[in-house]
Length: 480
Image (cartoon, helix red, strand yellow):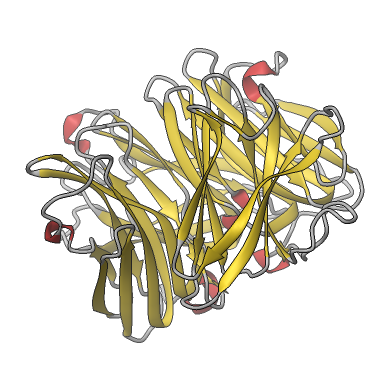
């Protein structure tokens, strides 16, 4: 699928590199820590908000939010657009663009870099465009070789983007290879200045046919890459960070499948194998708390060398009786995976989690009473991939000061659904109530956050969190 070039395919996600702190420009910032989000754009239809949270329980930290523009301006290619101090346990919200906010230049693409005095500050971008909303954490993990499966170019139904931030001190030569479903290859090249943003809009690449593509992006400098996808007919979006999914093993804890509504309802795994050997992928079903699963307990898939494939849960034997369960997988070599679920007229983009940690942090939580008997909220999914049982403490900290603590015990390979006892909230303020979630366990866990809205059918989604403890590759500790 992908021709060999000067950049050799990575043989293991152990080679992923956490970016070393660096100054953006001489004299511009003295704060040592940096995390990145390439997906920034200002336009009349766009709203962008950055939410900050301090994951530690003590002290305070200084922070600065920088915009790195893709295009040159009037001497403001890299500018600090906001700064402040954040106390432990607190959050802050920066309205970057839209709804009256204008911290960046109009009609411009840019990346966002959060500088801070400690690595305990997390940042989340909430991005709205094309009548769809999505959110994703900033990251400090980069690479020079990426693979993303399942990108789509369809002028009437989709808008897919590949955007990146060049974290190096030198200009970067960035190569994009796109292979369509017939095996045709399309190659594009960009040169991007140091500490600047670049990218491609598939819909504006006129040489491409309407099709589904597997992308490979290589560079002679370290990049932070994001793949942003919009399904126009469903008003849904996602920002994917592929450097979090190229791995030998992964877990999808909310592999919901509801075949009762029609033949189009399904969950599909899009898989790319960037290695030079054909590999097998072994899937295993993990039962949640909703009863037995009628689909297969295990199944396999093969992917050729430098090739891609897709796996439909309907095609391997799942049906309408299989509603809520998890799926874990292990491959013979690192693979890149993205997941699309069509369920009850919803389209849900999901990334599997390939990491494990004894400490996790989420700052996307929000509850809102929509009607007397229906609440918009989030559930936490926990998975114990190890051979021994683990004790877990989950702390929900709400914006009004309320704190709820739940204690769980997870057996080996058990999945637990934790909802924070939202029924304890009799009344909620207009607009709902934001909250953060801290998770501490006696051993490494996988944690994911599931967003659920019983009225707004475009909103279901799953988010990956920030591991605040020692980060382990799932394959190194999993017993599945």
